[in-house]
Image 1 (tube, rainbow, N blue to C red):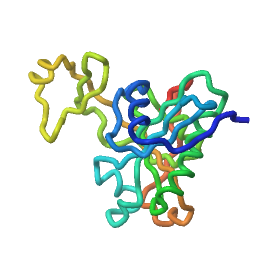
Image 2 (image 1 turned 45 degrees about the horizontal axis):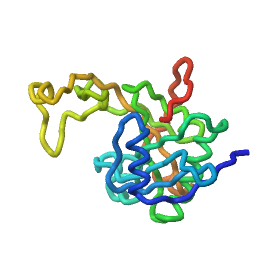
Image 3 (image 1 turned 90 degrees about the vertical axis):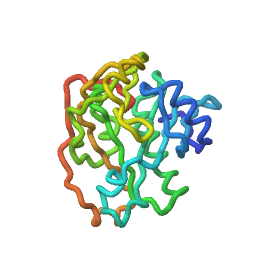
Length: 209
């Protein structure tokens, strides 16, 4: 039995928790957040947010239904929780999200292979896997804290000399594994994607991805 509770929390405390604990040290400015609580102690956050790319939102159902799609933007749960806590948490956060935003049909999420993530926790939730993204082998940067930085910042491209001046080093990024959670069974017939077998690698371990 999972001894925790899940409830919606404000964007600010959710964002601060993610920025303090998630490996990316980043979070969308206005996420919809759900907290995992051990008593009164916040031990995890699942944050949903609108993807920056319209293509990401259009991929599952087409451009006419982008408002039906959002993203599981960040997930972090402290180590030491009981077995299956992460998948249990995601399932309940998705259920509450649908109640809070009824128009949603689906949630997309990504596991970044550059960070060694495959998405085992999403597989445990029976998410649909629809293959790696098309952005593999692109040049990104890592800052002095090890954080991955996109080559385009604030609407403009960052040149290698400018990146070097910021203390960023070049990094070739691998593809992201793409997953989809359906919030409505009837939306399945509208899917415009093909499911793929789940990816596997040796010794998955725990990855908070």
